[in-house]
Length: 345
Image (cartoon, rainbow, N blue to C red):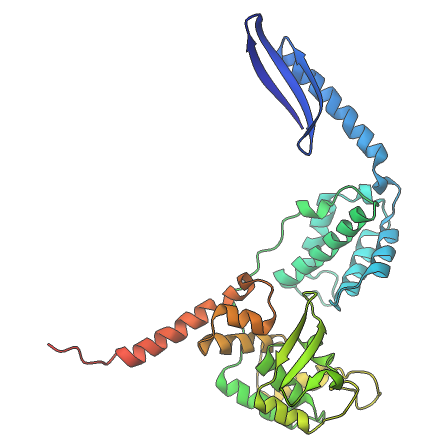
C-alpha cells in the first residue's frame, strides 16, 4: 500500500511516497510535486504486484491437488467435511488456485443457498451455507500453511445472516409423545438414543460414537473422544439414562451398534422419521433435541455458563440464543409469586 506525505521545509514543500507491505516500508522516495509522487507509487505498486503474481505458488497448484492433500491431512471430527470438499471439487473444477476469484465463490455459495444443485431444488439454511463457506476457507488456510497459495479469497466473501433466535424445542406434550413413539420402534435402542440426546445435549454423531469402554455407569458419566470443536469432554448421565443403559450393558463395542452388522453403528434416520410421524411432530430435526436440552436447562434456572458447559460450547456467545428463555421463565416465576401478593391500602 502506498502513502504520500506532504513535507514542509525551509527550502519549500516536497512529497514523500512510501510503499508498505504488512506494516513494513519497502521503498520510499521524495518528489517536488504530488503528481510525480503518485505516478511513481502507481508504477512501483504495479511492479510489485506483477512480481508477486509470478512468485505466487497458487499459479502452480491446481484445485484438485489441494483437495487431495487437504483430505489426506484432515484430522477433524466433522463428518460433513468430506462431503463439503467433494461439493467444492465438483463446483470449481480444476483451475489454478490463483485463478479462483471472490465473485466465483460468491456465486457458488448463492447457488448452494438456493438449492439449485438438488433435485427437486430446495433452499438451504443460512447456517448450512456458512459451513460450506467455512470448509473452502479452511482449505485455503491449509494451502497457505503448506506453501501452496499466498491468499485466501474466501475471506472477502460475506457470510449469511443466521437466524439463531429461532429455536425449535419439544414442548412437554411433544416430548411425551415422541418418547412413547420411540418405545414402540422396531429399533430397540431408539428410545435410549433420544433420551440421551434430550438429557445430555450431545450431538447425534457424539452419541452414536460412544463405546461401552468409555461408559462409567457407577459414576454416571461418559468420556467422549474429540468432539466437533476439537476438544474431548465428559457427558454427565442423569439417572433415567443410566437405568436405560443398564438394559443393554456390554463390556466392549458401540452402545448403538447395528443389529445387522457387528462393529458398525446403526443409522437412525428411518426409524427416527417414523417415530416423529407416529408422535405427530412436524418441523423437527434430530439436532433440535440438543436445542431441547439447552432450552430445558435455561428454563430450569441454569446460567448461560452452565448451559455452555453441558453442551460443550467453546464460547458463551453461542449459548446466548437461549438467554430469552431464561428471562421468560424468571418472569413467569415472579409473576406467579408476586402477581397476587397483597400490598395493603
